[in-house]
Image (cartoon, rainbow, N blue to C red; front, side, top):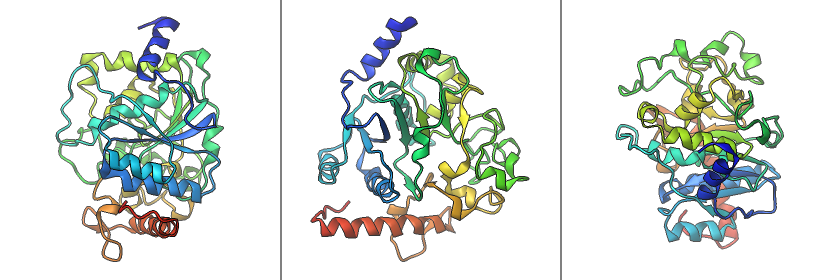
Length: 330
């Protein structure tokens, strides 16, 4: 799969209907495969609008997404686009972390060539401040065919393993974390990411800023077909991106993908500042919507202040939807 024709064929296979589903050349996208994440998606969409974003969110859905989910999106006029479920050529066992089976499909935005800029967001994110500037940061053009130094933008993955998950790689320790390297200069951490090569050099796949490109998507698919490497990727899409484009991506500051365990003092409390967070990422469980507001909202048995942020905004969403006659339980 080399050359322009092969690259275009790769995109045509993944994205056969290259018509825009919204009247915008720049869009937010989020993947949805089941109802479990639908409350998160609805809160994400509401939070983007609440923050005054000029750009629409498109729900990228797979065949596994049920009819009642479609009805919920349609009731709220959230645009959507069907995508194929993306997997490597050889099965990778993620039984320790089943969420990663879906994560390969988060590479699909690279194929959405009908748009000039796509910012992929996880459905368990909540936008607290406008971050439309991500639509305009400089990235490589398609003419560089994925060989440039600014292929995409993302924040670093935290490799501290604060929950001490035994199946995580042995090198996932605080000393190897890019965010740890920023502790001595917390002011700078609010506006600059550590170099993309810092720590283990792995992006977090929850937020990806992409200029869709047939050539870049072809490189991604070629790697997915490489049996030897994909079986070694413990973190699906972000492992692949960190490997194929090692040191050639733009590292954003943590405020655009604020991983909620990083708020803990012993993790990355030295750089975390609540007032600067633009986008909170509710990775790991339980999700805020899986707990009842008013009680103790917990993460790993500890009170989770960020879950209160989610519930405050989501209750605002639910109240406005009720006024509009939307009461479907989501």
